[in-house]
Length: 371
Image 1 (tube, rainbow, N blue to C red):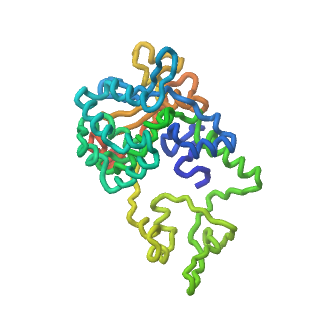
Image 2 (cartoon, rainbow, N blue to C red):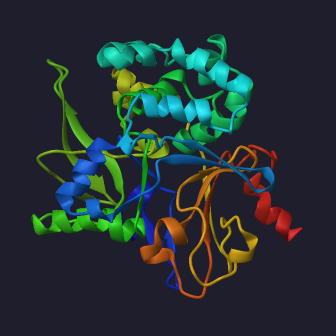
Image 3 (tube, rainbow, N blue to C red):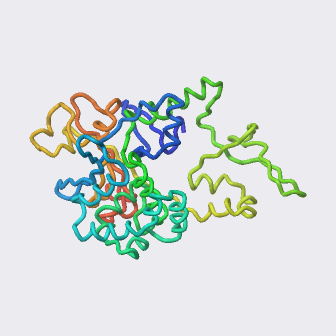
């Protein structure tokens, strides 16, 4: 590709519109990324959102999971802000809240409050059970799964609670329960190219580094010592015949790329590489739609003005095929707000081969349209 960033890339189309690879949200527990952005000068490009998770239900019924908790102007943090959020959210019924409390109250998260390492050790043992099976076995309800946890699972991993492991979900919950700002969201002020990857690229180039675009790696060249069995990479074949040699090699690959590039002998002899063949990539469709009014402004009489209006945050839905979405003109205004125009909705459709609500196969849309 002719642009930086891979899965978090963006580019401009012929009309000057920024097109993103996906909807990118930055939770407060992304500590390594924040350190990288601080080091490369991009940390101030993140815009802090209200500490609430918003669910948009059918017929414009908007409900919140609100972590904001103050007593006499004193901010109350973890774990109490989370307890307040889950006990007061109107997204769940009273019965679902009680079942939710039972399941999470008997989970390793409780141990993590006093023993973080021990709690994580217990959570790691839950990699072979789905979140649905684990949650319901602890007394959790399907109402909670359907109205809250499925949309969140789709936003986190693009799969639902039947497919995502309990380990994945509880790892996130453990961060939320033990660190006050782990669940607060930030979003880029503008496009990922300009406000995430560009500062990193500039940092690398100032240090004398070079980044080569449109240059695919075709083969890993290596030698294996017959006596010791030690394998040493000695180059990368780029394009047809060019070989690049370096002091160190790092590969950041998606699932199809890893399956294609990792040498077969490595897969045969080393379990960590052989297990890559068991991974299945998850398809996702991201759609950007520009409107002439403000879609998330709930007061209809105010939705047609020139002034930006609506919900400035990530949005979830249990009642749409796009389980998470946002108005980029509000959440990332430096590039996406355009005077005289309205919302720029970015919607994440997953699974696209079978819509979460409609069951529709979005991959067949061009063919259907042609018919």
